[in-house]
Every structure is written in C-alpha cells, then in structure tokens.
Image: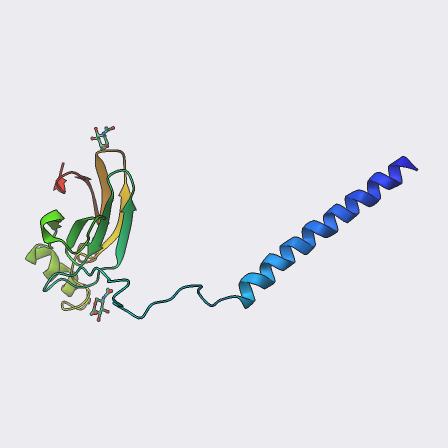
Length: 156
Ligand SMILES: *[C@@H]1O[C@H](CO)[C@@H](O)[C@H](O)[C@H]1NC(C)=O
Ligand SMILES: *[C@@H]1O[C@H](CO)[C@@H](O)[C@H](O)[C@H]1NC(C)=O
C-alpha cells in the first residue's frame, strides 16, 4: 500500500511539473508584448550611437564585463568602446587592420569580388585572458588570427 501511495504522489508531482512547464511555454508564446517600450530616441531614453565615417559592417560585438568595454569588429577595423558611453570618442580606442594590396589582388585573382569580398572582415572576437583578445579576420579570403592587447588594441 505504502509503495503505491509513493508511486501516486510521484506521478502527481510529475504531472505538476509538466503542467508548470507547459504553463511557462504558453506564457512566453502568448505574452510577447514588452512591458515597457519607447520610440527610438525618446526623451526618456536617449540612445547612444556609434559609427565611424568610412567604416562598414559592424557585425561583431563582444561585451567584456572584466573591463566594462564593448569590443566591436567591423570591416578592416576593431574598436573598444567604453560601456559608460559608447558614443564618446575620447573613451574609444581602435585598431585599423587592413589588407595589403598584394593579398587583395590574390583574392580578386581567385575570382572573388574586389569591392565586396577582398577585405578583412573581423569574424571572431574572444577574450583570451585578462590582458588579451583573440581576433580573426577573413583577410581577403585568407583568414588570419592574432592576439591583441586589450588595453591599447595593439598586436602582440
Ligand atoms: C557590408 O555592408 C554593406 C553595406 O551595408 C553590405 O552591402 C554588405 O553586404 C556587407 N558585407 C558583408 C560581408 O557583411
Ligand atoms: C594572455 O594570453 C597571451 C597570449 O597567449 C599571453 O601572451 C599572455 O601572457 C597572457 N596573459 C595572462 C595574464 O595570462
């Protein structure tokens, strides 16, 4: 008798758990409206913007809580932005990482498009340890990776 009671309570517990899961599932599916929303750049919530003339393809972001920075990988460029204000140029550091003309020619010779493909697009951005980042770029279709000192964004 005791055994079957235990079994029953187990089953009940399982049913409750399942019910809980389903409820969570349904809640997230139905309830997709944000609790708070603001139009872009509303006075209550001004947006900070970052972009640099002539730099395209800001495709990679790395949030680094160790140093309160946002690292941004773009086409031929890497930026370190202070989380306190990403728009403040004084707080920013950058590393221009271009592709040598010879590499670009090689890339074009392989049949790639010189104006779109044959650049160095930063594709991987990781924090290696407290002092270094690990960064990889397409380097005109011959990928290159490097360690970079996060303090001053210099190659090491
Ligand atoms: C880079 O950005 C340009 C302009 O927005 C876009 O046309 C192009 O497809 C992007 N290229 C890559 C590789 O993301
Ligand atoms: C972080 O990694 C780099 C690259 O391997 C190395 O040169 C450096 O000494 C390391 N720094 C620390 C604090 O471990």
